[in-house]
Length: 307
Image (cartoon, rainbow, N blue to C red; front, side, top):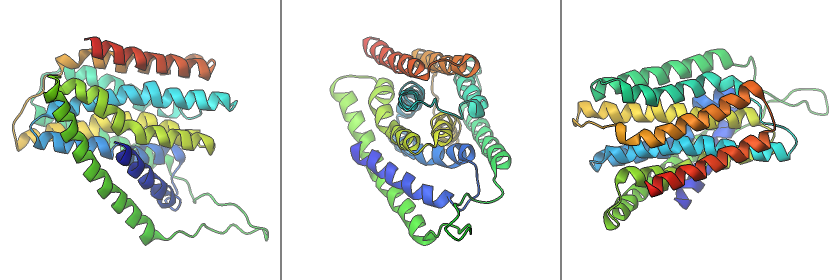
């Protein structure tokens, strides 16, 4: 998981160079691009979990990652920004994404539709959300800073090298994600632990480390819009793109996933989302909100372990 997290951060740094010449806003890049990149571990875990015949491991990972993203990633984001005397900006820009990522788990519990068709619906929601963000968040020109002569030179980036870094880093993520899943399954078998809880606790933490490292780095550089969009956007990416692929695979290898056992995890997804909603609408000391979010995640871990 340590190598996985480092490789993900390596890819993120390469993506930062890549997005410099795209002309997109921080919020659009945070959701449409970075949230997809940082969700690559969850996607690969899902693929390997399906091939191992344990799709429930992936569902537990996705829901557990969402609790981690809001409880820990956004919590640390608020704490860090608060101590720097500037509450994170951009949460209100992704309020609709937060709403969708909160409602989807409830719909999955209530609606009884064949798994494959649910996958098609989730992938459609992801595609529409990305299109909407790119359409509304494009800048006319990439940002640049004037030089001493008063000109605005564009930053020169070695595009082939940047693309190579992204591909190489993704390959390392692929290998480490495979080891993460196989090790998690061995732990579950050795201690008679349900794969659902291994996914929600161990694997979810490891696959969410990229979001955490990116958010801390973004806050230090004053790019809180980017960090907020990535943390919240990753939740929607997990529940639409990744979960959509998991469910869509049932067309080729039929299986069904009962969402009911995940009710406790879904409850904490809603609780952390409500805390963010309260902050967006009422405001307040972001350091206090950050501490409440982190405490909520600690309670979540205790409830899952004791349960």
